[in-house]
Image (cartoon, rainbow, N blue to C red; front, side, top):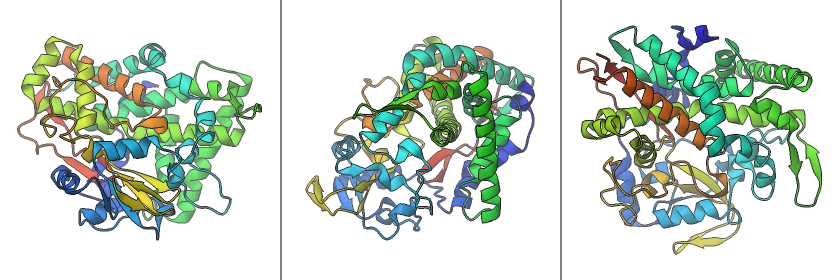
Length: 427
């Protein structure tokens, strides 16, 4: 199983190159947009126009369902917090991609209450913090990180973005689902290809989707006969408990959709945030040394990185009724973009918010979202980053950025940020 984990497979570079991913998606933004988002926030808490439009960036339609609709953007902490928490006015249905069948391909991401709460309850217990500190960490994360760090230690240099950050989450989530060996990376490759619009032909995308569905359906069939201690077995055993008293198990299709969402999110965003956290510490040496001396500070380092530079700094909601937000009238059917990147740097909530400072008083941020749709896997992501940083500090007392390599920088799309690379010296 560890061969695919530590192998020098070029597929990792294909799947985990943040810049290339954005180029293919057509939403690449190389520069740091935080100053521009801050300036927008200071101008007004809610403004007419999609975020890209307000930032004068090339158009990129993130959600097909938003095509042709008027856009608005929320930028302050108060405006974004209100929008995240009010599902009656601001609907998640904007995530839906219309299809001939009308199927909800993203499951709970495109559901509102009470449907969202009903479906989320079938999987939520497996992602609660106590479970991530025991079952996830002890069964999967520690072994994966230790194996990768041992491989990295064979050399004097490393590129942590690909050799560590990209690998920990994808292998954690696939093992937790119940997949083993090469299936982890084969599944991930095909899952990414199902949404690779413009990069591959429709026939190739359909073939990738068929591969993903086949692998999951085969695994579901196996787990129905031989249940395991894994997420997929948990979904098979779970029951939907509807508000009207009806109870039933998840259908095979519902399990497939839920599993694909967990696999896509679990292997797609956590690695970027891990890289951002490691980069933040490596470029703030006094804070790195503070963490090295007191490992209890790792938790604060993680939370501060998610506040300071969240990997996904903007979310969208469909305005479900004529309403008002911070004095701005929003018509039914328009789209509200929630710029949590700007909200997380709102000076009304944080002192010197543009600085990375793990010593600042700890309070809630929006890096994992807010409200009922707050990131399901955030505690798994925190555990992955925590274990990885601990292992790096233990193994490499002189860990530092490689001065001979190009300086790492944030890149990717405005909608999915990550590191260009994290080249380091180990000795």
